[in-house]
Length: 464
Image 1 (cartoon, rainbow, N blue to C red):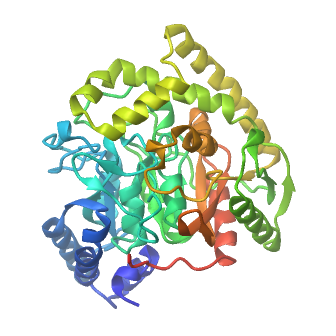
Image 2 (cartoon, helix red, strand yellow; image 1 turned 90 degrees about the vertical axis):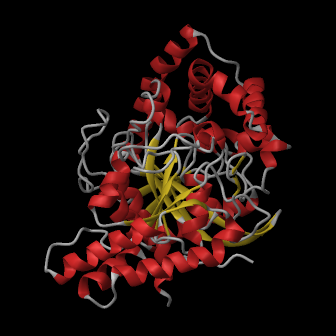
């Protein structure tokens, strides 16, 4: 196995034991980037010199007998919508190509403190708006499994890079599926943490409005559940820059291994391949000793409508002029389609949405007290043909019901890989979404490990 193929947990073990140097691991990943990134366009800003310096510092610390961080020598990527000192926080925008950060977002700082080696910055659609990854600044990111399907979005660059071996972990953000969906599309494990689990703040910009404060989170993509546990624990270290941060324990109280299965939430037209993937995940959990019952889920549709209203209110308030200035054709089209489906809300509708949020969260928490885990679709369809939203946006939005509905409540969700199938656009990864209560990511991770042990192994993929 090449060094770039190794998991984060393996790298830490080998670097700590002196079986390999952090520099050797970093050089292997940089060479892998040379080989595959021209095809994928996943990493859009490289960090070679600083990465090698960081790796050398890890090696010096080990040689001196100094304590090493929990991600010592692990190559990672960061998404281009979080501040990283010396790099532009573009968010996929030409308007922000010169917005150079002078400090690190807490999630970046926590990775550095843990000894991780940041090898590059990954692509995102303009405004991090879509489930597809293309913008007028950096261009189009491809899925390493199959160029005909989307790599997902908005963290499509992160997932594409991680699946192809450019780093053992890819940082992503999620306000409407932007971690969960790219993980699904690229055949990875990906987790959207609870609101407040991972501290985040971009000092390069003004604080976000209330909708994003309540719904947007940072989290990891990885090729193994163990790597998600490791990287999430590192990202979750406290930072006073984020008043929403909650220093909750990574492991909660004992819980009954009882799960709910909902194949078609609120009448969702779930594709047969997706249904089979969900039933496979449920069967694998039953094999691991879980009790799984097929039931109706709490609401997704009304929360999804309110989530979209809050998004549109914030765009109208803070980004309307930027959309016009940026003039990214894809972003303008998607925004117009969103306006067709959900009108920009007035002040009373925004207040009503925030009021209703509490009731939905109460309903979800009550459900998750009875069933500590919910298994449901990541998407109603296998990964979309690439750029499908530009020809059939309503189809995409409907399929992504669970992606959009969940963040309103600030709840955690996870995409767990289950296998491959032949979809509309050919060979495609599949997965299932797991949902648990607030700050109970450990339940999702426990269940995901059981599914992972009974699923095909995730291997680094080389794009055709």
